[in-house]
Image (cartoon, rainbow, N blue to C red; front, side, top):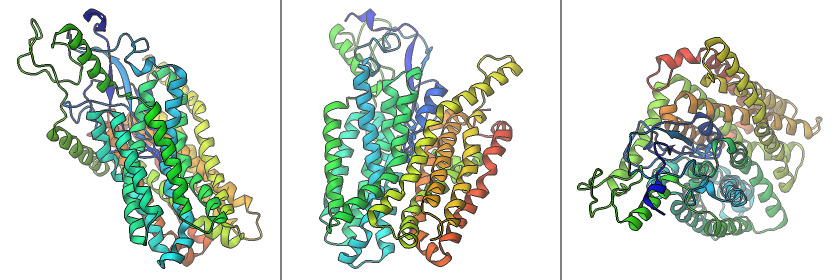
Length: 586
């Protein structure tokens, strides 16, 4: 490789941070950006993940001192679930700035040059990890009765293990997100997933309930990594034009994990008297994914790989003026003539890391306090995830008590909600066409080619906000012995469908409305969702016993009914609110 061939003229790929997602999952997935701009469509695709997961990394305006990432999850999660964006920009001229050759697809060091089959293998692995983590959150609910019989604890103490795991999912991204900005994705994956695997072992052999509860929190904390960071891995591999379907596959994983967990756990505990086999199976599952991560998931974080490329060029040319965008040039390096003996370096000191973690905590709180659109939409999605986790206590009461389902059949009852979530994801091409139509109409009115508004992301939430209470009321008032069990299950399907539409719509709206603080907006959403998901299971069973199945389910339906106006109001008045905002872009 000769020095001139490493240059990309005035064009090189730049990155914005991951956000969680999210998952439900991810979590997602709080990078501090070191670049100039975002590509909205990339950012939005990544924002669908998260669910999961969600994370607390920061964005472009929050810091310029460390590497930037790109995820959403959405990732949802950032997921990340995670918000990511990648775009070609025009930075100030720097003859020794190292970038990718062209768009990166022909550069052997760029992850976008990886063969398509291997790219999809990586997507499947990181999606399986997100699915495993969110599935582990709910598979635990199937061991309540057997565990209580052995340890003698009450149901509320057992439920605390579910809440603590979700609390770990909320807090973990605030550490792992910033760390991934400095050290890359692969080291964080390997360390965190190994720790996640280790903390399953004491749960499987726990001598008392206290051990189970402590390890559940630590397990959720470690497992949150994939909800926070891996949405960025998906966007690292694919260009904006290719990203839609890989991100759709990744986005649906953390959503469906909580619905499949009780199904797996139900069959295990129905067919074996040893509840610890639930954790043995989870341990085997996690180990298989660990092997796949070690064997097949490379480093894909562009800033880290660009630093490696710059280091390789310096070694080949002997010229220390070559540097990556995220490297700091040491004093004494002469960019105009001659080279110093001190090569550029990336900031990985404790002060930089702690500063990034501090920002990942500060900005999301500011958005939740000062931004009415952010707080209202985050509250809506938080209620929905809280209800989803509340159902882990409600479904055994409804289908076990009313219909006499066995433990494995109760697990099967969650399939309705899971199918609804998948159906919602599959409608993404329809909403893309709706948004394109709104954009064409705006372009005709303004004369600006490709004109768009963040509010064009809200039509799915408008439909979803109507589906959610409809599904909940159907579930509430058909959960009686005289009505076939398929009817309340169909109600849960409609609820799942509407929930998916609201999640994906809100995620992408937040990214578009707060482009300079997209990671923080997603982190705020992830944090609020996980807090509600932590709290709701703790009072759900008592509420159903006190109010009865019909009125308890109706109560949460009325909560969602109160949130219905917000997507419609923000669709109509969002632009005016953004013009008055201190964070949103008008």
